[in-house]
Image (tube, rainbow, N blue to C red; front, side, top):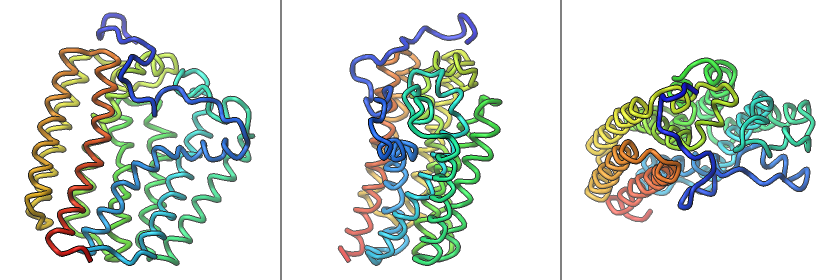
Length: 317
């Protein structure tokens, strides 16, 4: 960390922070350790975007069997990618407060077994999606996992301050998987949703990284808040947030959505931009974690409003 490059941020979670991303408790069983390898709370966030996208693609509720298959396949694919991420990053995880209790760091699972488990999850995900949905959704899910591991984890994370910007594309693929599972094709709507999630990722993750900037510095990971002045970090966050809001508004007419979605997108977007600007004026751990928490609420409510809009416009069918 460059001395004097940014305001000091407390290294421990301040009141009002998001407990979901506080340092994890050490798993107490081998089963719990394998579950922890998949990063289930991150998977939950990915799946939040999948179901509403499937509803939009179907213009109503898709076949329940297809929803279940897609969620299982998406969970397996994301879980496998996350497990490989932990396998690769076990050295730097030991240096970071937030990750020092992960299973491979504390020795609950042998690295070789973790890698076998991860690869098995990826194979299972591909088979489940191919058999239960279609080949396109299976290929997209596998490509997201490969991109996350190959481009983000193995290359960009340790070498570039743009790591989460480019690597975050993997987290935007679930909307493509959800749409393709229903339509067996892609179109403008899922591509715009992909862009929305791509633009959402940097301000979402950088808000977390502000609080853990010292962790990333200790592990020599060039996450933007650990290598750039806070003013530059906030400027980048604002740019991505504005682009994100524009993307959500472009989706409004393209997807034929109504006022429920449109008004929600405007209100949520204004709050997000305001919150990002406010972080620049008050760059503390508590403020960054509040913004991080809001970013999760933002995407949850936005996609929920999109799904509700479809139901209201086309009936609850």
